[in-house]
Length: 421
View (cartoon, rainbow, N blue to C red):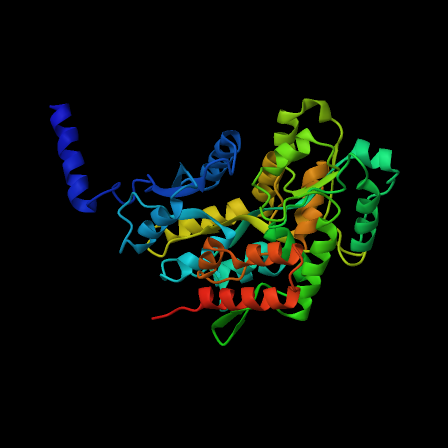
């Protein structure tokens, strides 16, 4: 009889409330926030700690973190954003590459987080290379999470042998030191001829850009005087080694070249040092790091900033919970925890002290303050698909007229960026 009574009570409660618990009973309804994060962005230990802490602070929310593979994720994200409503299985928070945000903004599938970012999250302090790609026409859709950028990885023993006793802080010092290092049997620097990410930093340092926007129309800018000065510095630096002029840094992978030969320097993310040591354990203790030098000693050179932003789909049915997850992950506490755990750069320059104890991450953080990203337009992917910058670089390095080749590449960039109806 008691069992029948309990069953009747449950049926009555369901009829009164449709779902959940009977009002006034004190049992809170719980919502699940589905979060898509990319593989290797965060350790499982970090995710476990974050989840436990977040759920303690939000007793009405459960986190469901699902790790995604980078390969093919773009189409998967677009499909999730194009869905008319969240069916309970779609993501409520998504990690995306910082330069991918413009692609997702076009379909109007992202939640506008301008108010939260301006009023609560310190938008003005974010690293430009993370924040700018997440913004479209003064509206913030992508919230900076973590950054990574190139530094100079160098051989301490080869610097000592060449008598280079202080690390260069300016471009002029860098050229002078690299010239001393570039001796018989030793490359001053290994810099592939088509490393356009590194070239971009030199162009930005000179006040130039890869492309510029005017009234919603983009056009290539490699032929400006500033961009040509950046290319000229690249040419001078690249000549102080034997990097292939017709290939980029992955052909062959520069980690292997650095590990196998007497190469004094490469320009790469600090994490590449692990690959170098795996191939040549004898270099343990001999690798050091410093920021890419700038034109003057008061600040490092500009660098391309990679990394991730967090976005919220407009079709989420748990908006407040999703925003709370973004606020927590990108806030000072957990952002610095992630940076220390994974050797990243935090999303604000003033948080760089969190990685001061790690030489590579500290060098990266110093450069990140001057970081930039590729032009904030979804059409930039078309430029990279058949990259005219690479061809321009090879021709200049083999003796062609820089201005002529830059004009040709700028026209090709403009064509790729021109949206035709």
